[in-house]
Length: 130
Image (spheres, rainbow, N blue to C red):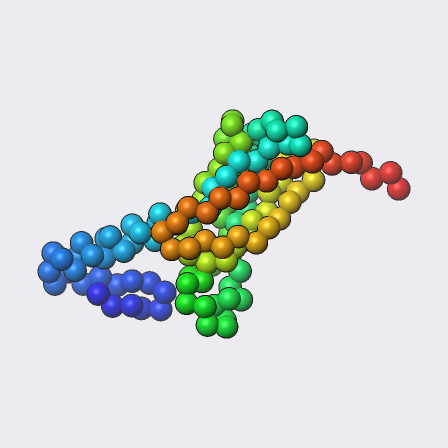
């Protein structure tokens, strides 16, 4: 098993090494951001857009657990307002938007192998009366 940049290269010299590589990759996939998106009355917002953007600045100053991903991940909430995004450990900006609502954003830290919750309550957007 060799580390190549941020990728893990597995050599199949023994069954143990191969299984260890699979276990390590599976552990990375278990890290996630998940939550519920509701309106100010508590009703679920279906089809809200959740954008997860990695903040790489932590890795620039030596934080070893800010692995992150290089591309944004976009998901929509289900009928009950739930979403889940599998991501590696790191710091992320989470943006939430839905038609007729004011968007929200927050910084979220995901630790290796953990589910991190981020719920958001969206308020109805008020029209600009300029």
